Amino acid sequence: GDSVTQMEGPVTLSEEAFLTINCTYTATGYPSLFWYVQYPGEGLQLLLKATKADDKGSNKGFEATYRKETTSFHLEKGSVQVSDSAVYFCALKRPGANSKLTFGKGITLSVRP
Amino acid sequence: EAGVTQFPSHSVIEKGQTVTLRCDPISGHDNLYWYRRVMGKEIKFLLHFVKESKQDESGMPNNRFLAERTGGTYSTLKVQPAELEDSGVYFCASSQEGHFSGNTIYFGEGSWLTVV
Image 1 (cartoon, rainbow over the protein chains, first blue to last red):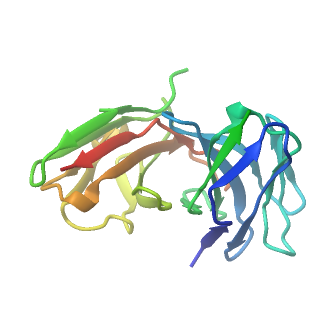
Image 2 (cartoon, chains in turn purple, yellow; image 1 turned 180 degrees about the horizontal axis):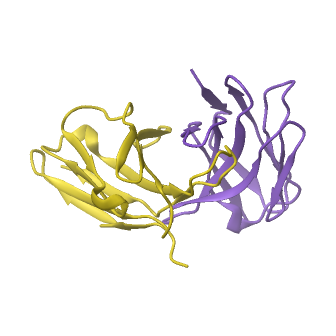
């Protein structure tokens, strides 16, 4: 079945540090890939997405590139801020009108001033 | 435009009691999903409605959980009787119908359930 694997956390960084959060997936066909974020006390928000190989999703300074050859969708940001502290979830969605999201375990990022 | 709204936002109930969670999807969204995250674990799919029909309920953990979507608008998820392991965050989500896997699924803020 479909699965998403995220690197183990939590991750603690200093402000302005470079961030990479690894995500790899297993799925048949050509899924769409997503990063969702949950800020403290809030719900899940879509951060970015990519729908085909080599697509790059970007938002709020975060980027992730859909790499089919390595089945990966790593999340990166050049300079993190304290406000980026949150839980980050990688997810995939199979092709098809009514397919569901499959999530990774999530990773908690804490950015200290 | 209003997003996905869930009620209650927080609930603390005793083991054996009943709790009903409500979700109002974004207007016009035929797809409605329920997910759950138990503390520290991944977000797991529970079920999926297309309008009022259950498209996929493979993630429902057992028959103590009952989901409905009468009229294809809002949905309820009832847990009866609640057990300690049911504690977690219950997310509702919705999306437009379409033949595109990249259609964004929008989530609500979640209903935080604690069973004591």
